[in-house]
Image (cartoon, rainbow, N blue to C red; front, side):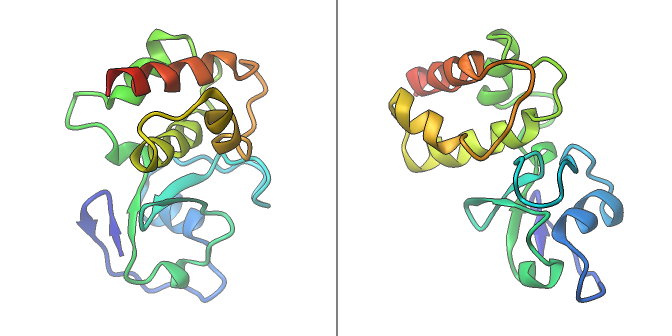
Length: 148
């Protein structure tokens, strides 16, 4: 698999999740482990250009895939526009849901550069946040949409 532009060749047990590989084998801890049942979205990564809860994906299913984690979004020290907007708009508090939210937003904006508020809310519906109430998250995504 290719993770954040870097190829990896790993041997894993058939029951090992992509989440376990990303966090423990590759050391990319920006991808959070939440419910590990596919209900909270904190483990969201972009796999082959679509957001997935990597706690539900077996690592062997990712064979040959391209994976983008939150660590691969920035360019060097330069934050991605979504990362900047989340900070500027106060769309982060505890930060636990933020990587998954940002990657879902990226997948949405890559597919639909000018989504409506309803489309944004629908896209992030699978990602739970217990701190912000979602309004600032939606506004941060809208702001990036306006920049495009």
